[in-house]
Amino acid sequence: MSTELAGFYSTWKSDRGRMNRESPEMGRGFATFYQSVMKDGALALRDKELIALAISVALRCTPCIYLHARGAVKAGASRAQVLDAAAVAAMMQGGPSFVYVREVIKVLDHLEAQ
Image (cartoon, rainbow, N blue to C red; front, side):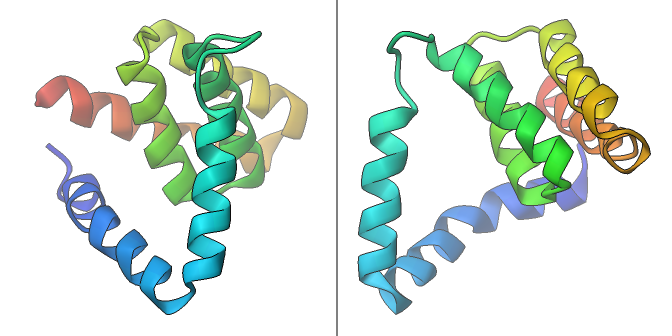
């Protein structure tokens, strides 16, 4: 199990709580928007998580990768589907995104080790 990922996942909820306490309007606004989008609709939640993951890789947002790779797996995506979404991002963004695919692999390895 990756110590880095275990640490991130164990502190994320409290970190998010602190952000919400420090800026409650931002927290409520983002939470409402997030919850209204990230549920089954015209696209299944799994597909939305895969899209969010691909965007996370393209934008090189490590915390986003950690959250959406885990979200995709929890929503039923296979390892191959998660890596395929990451590959699409790398293809669209090139080298800078390609190197972030390793973050996706770290999450998948961490989840499988649990």
